[in-house]
Length: 377
Image 1 (tube, rainbow, N blue to C red):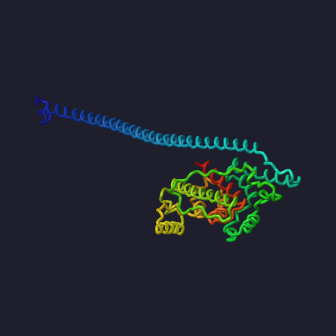
Image 2: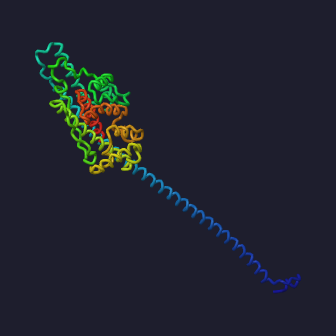
Image 3: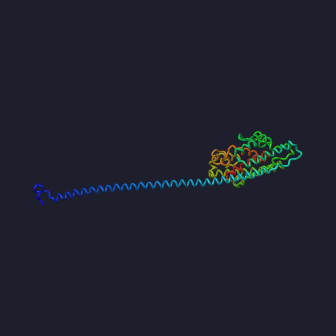
């Protein structure tokens, strides 16, 4: 066994060489195993990376799906709201069409009143012309858009152009002649109401110009400061004054409710603190306190608003843009309405003489307000 080693002077044995060979082979196998493990790790990491990437893709897809679901829900909600608005608009159009058809039918069926036969041809034709003009006013205010361009233009040619009015002369409230002159200066067509002779029929009573019906208002909007004034004129004048006073009172209380409800819907109850000037609000508080001192029951603050103060709230820039433009469409036109109503309103509340011109203004402008609010609501 040791011969060869001894011959060449080696001290290693054959078995030792075999061990070394086995060790080298084992080392090689270990290296191969390490390589295999590295490959397994690489494949495993690649698989985990693919799984992680796929998981991220799934999460992204779920997020996108959720986003689209939210967007779809928003679209559905908007579509439902649009459907409700469209149905409301459709009902409004149908009501306006029915109203227009009824008024046109009524206007076509109106016949001129009996005119005394002793009137001359010229007086008869003049009276009939006045009646026709008033009937046309009645048809216009009950068929056209209350504050559309057509009716606004028609009323300016009939009732005068009030766009430049910012203050009313004091005399118009105490002097009927001055009031009529003021109307004429603005372009009021007084010819519609003038009979050619004293024994001609009163065209305002003869024509079928409808008296507007103002909706009932809740009691809380009544300032409780109204009373029917003592009228010194007697007879037909007294009856006219009382009727006008009642119409004005009903209109003003209803307008308070309209303003309060629309403003509360847009801004909430805090609008009384935030959407009107402090001077006006202070005046309302003072009126309520003064009423309490005399034993009157306290009312909501809006009940102490004066007629002109309601216009200030309506025409304020942000209130108009956010609330009232949707109702009245043209600020200048609704301003004219309030100015046309102011003389008859003040005269009725202070027991002044009421003219036929005042009654015509009251009927026309009240009808426009009521129809505009009714179309909106």
